Image (cartoon, rainbow, N blue to C red):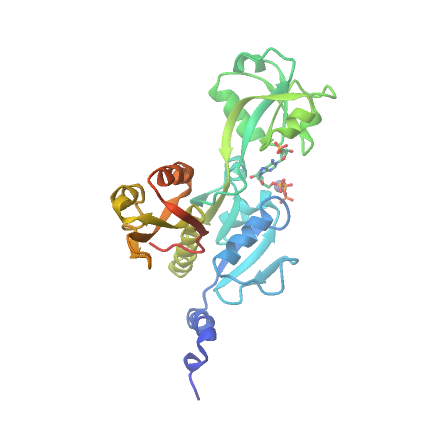
Length: 309
Ligand code: PRT
Ligand code: ZN
């Protein structure tokens, strides 16, 4: 019989991966949000990592076509518990949930999406000077654990009203004097006549794992993480191409660190070169402006799909 390894090139990787699954029988189970704010970005991260899901995402569980991974779609609140119990080996969930639920899981990586903050808000017309404002007040929240911890840390005693949703309307209907809730743009607070006065926690989506992963699962996690990091790194960097007069190459090269150093190629027009490099998004605009000042022309900026260093 012909070995599956002799199949056409485009299938080779898939077959290698599947053979690996068959030979070890190991699969990494990941829990992601079924629907809600983290769902789309979680599925996209898997896709960007080259992991194709079988039968779409409208079920409780599916598996990957080309990677030893099973995907469970769950409510975000339940994900830390499932990971602690090893129903799933890893999960994608907001830091806010991980801290609130206080489960025995390990944080593996911040994922850079789902950014928000857990904040205290009070009525817009309140004279809030400091956290002592909250003394003996009623605070409505869906985050009683983090709220209590914040109050204790600040030596304030207040009454916590745990409610299950629509926290922002609590002050308006006389249920509470203040709220603790997640904020991203701030427009929900604004529309409800509230202002943000303290930040309790800055949050984003993170990858968590069971604390006692067996080595087979850890190995698959390492392969997954290698891809996650390459995808995230690529997102924070751009490929840049420009033309420069040879006389100004030294100063232009000084502005462009690149992964090692920039690539410089001669142009057909004498006295000119093409320079290629990689720029980090943080100093992107600043460097572009300085490149122009240094005589760079025809600057092209191209997204990078994966970046492996
Ligand atoms: O059904 P399930 O239980 O899975 O979902 P859920 O309804 O509990 O959660 P979901 O989908 O609303 O949020 C999932 C995660 O997204 C949260 O746990 C956070 O980690 C993250 N996240 C990021 C946010 C926000 N931004 C956010 N703005 N979660 C909620 N909000 C809400 C906030 O509670 C408030 O009602 O959006 C409103 C404020 O938004 P702004 O833009 O008006 O400030
Ligand atoms: Zn939830």
